[in-house]
Image (cartoon, rainbow, N blue to C red; front, top):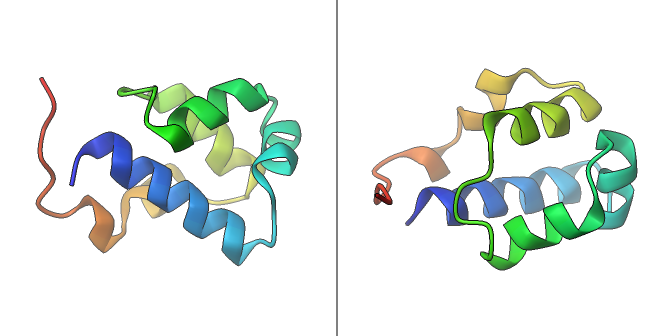
Length: 79
């Protein structure tokens, strides 16, 4: 799995856990809906750490909690 796919799956998982839509997450995080949709659809191949940090902050989780998931094991590194 690629990093971008793992990030998208983790966001989807967190939204499900918090009963949130992507639109609601965009409002909470201050990110545009198009930014989140680009990540979720795979158009954004390299979401920034700042973007992920804003998502984490809006969900009251630490950045390390975001990446502490089996999704991020054995990734295909995109160069």
